[in-house]
Length: 236
Image (cartoon, rainbow, N blue to C red):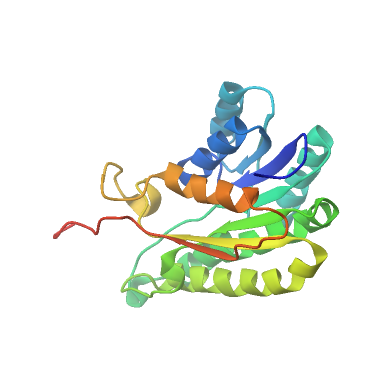
């Protein structure tokens, strides 16, 4: 299964930790060349050095179009092509609307929604050339609102709408767009403390990304919902 190509290249945002790091590690182990985009340049360099050949650190901020353009150019210069864009970078700021400032609301939308838009815009020419795949790490919170999640819900609802339209626009040009919507994942996201055994592991979400990338070119898995098998313990 997979593309009939000697080398596949992916650019992953939010690559320094959590789901992004797990995706980088899995794709690299499966033979992908990987571009690592995140704000934590030191962590990216350490991860790339650990992985070795085929891992390229690309420090940048997903809210800045010029950083995306620099990252795409860096991948193309290093590896000659781009087959996959994984829009993973995201932040979670959970507050009731009465306590949520305009600046906080803007920050969540800029990272979680504007960032993937800018990434797609920057990567699209290369993806059209390779007939590549865009995988967006959304959330079940993009379909299910919850108290205290106004900014996060808005960003993830918006991501589903944005990339749903992109899927319809780009499929006939050979670019497939896939939304992966996980439930609770055991990371430090939104100030959580890792160690909840009932939650999904970051590696579980990375496996869903790999599945989307390895589907035959004739097949488009436009959305993957991923839930923990167990529900949250009472009182958690």
